[in-house]
Image (cartoon, rainbow, N blue to C red):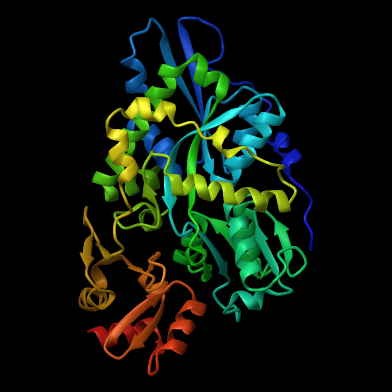
Length: 445
């Protein structure tokens, strides 16, 4: 089923109340307005976590340029209303996913209010931040099973991009082969629970949250696409030119928040959970030491390349025309903010996948070399486990151990996010078989 373009609908999200902006004159008090998405938890170093740590305010206080700075933090559910507010001149700095970033760039140019991508928050080089899930009792086991079914997603989001690409690879027309429901994440989650949609394709943290709550199970791991996905920070071009030291202060603070998250992953997860109402166990799935997201403000070439590939998906959906990605990406401010440290950050790579257990009452997790070793530990400490995580044997995407699809291959126990990849492994390895989580625990004990 074809969907209608939704770019024009962006303006519907503009709140009726006015807000301050750093653009507003040369008075001694300057208000910097930051738009963020508290529950899109791989933007926390530019939003939720950064706000709670107070690093941006501290950086602004250190400028000593004759101004008094105030930060107006504005929380939104998606990137669309942030874009609407930015193009209205009411938000100075915002964070959102890769597909919304492109719409941000297109709308800014169209309305004569250009924006620039100035840093990155969380990314996954394979695409694991987006997942397609079904209801717990669904009989669907592969992408091919979605043909003719109702699928909820947020059109124009990275999760929609994952859905489109995954369907194309499965030989299904993403417009005519399914009935696409354009819904906000919370609405789609409710639709899945109510049985009014067969599947849901969404971005962090919805798939993990629904799986953790027992309201969904994974059907497709976005990392199977092996295409980078990320969230980033965008700033109005006029703001960046008028207040470069303020933008640099934000990017320095973002780097500090990134370092804090990497040094204190459990503490950061607890902090974000407190601010958002999300379970800390779900936050850690994405933002933990070996989580699905890697945090680094550097604008890596792989991410810019992925952004260019994303343009064609949005154009096909008639959500944008051509987007000049090279003009949109502007790393001069983050380079200046981070100085000699920038090159080192640009060269960093995601940490290797690992199995982790979060014991109850612990402020640190415990890592294991193999999933089988983790299972043995869990089996011996069943009442002392807060959460257990294992990386998909094919993609490396972290998932909850008790929600994974397990395969026994001789003495080896292998976890998978989705049933189709597990079955592909079984088909390629004689003697391998799918087992229940309970059976996997028993074999490992």
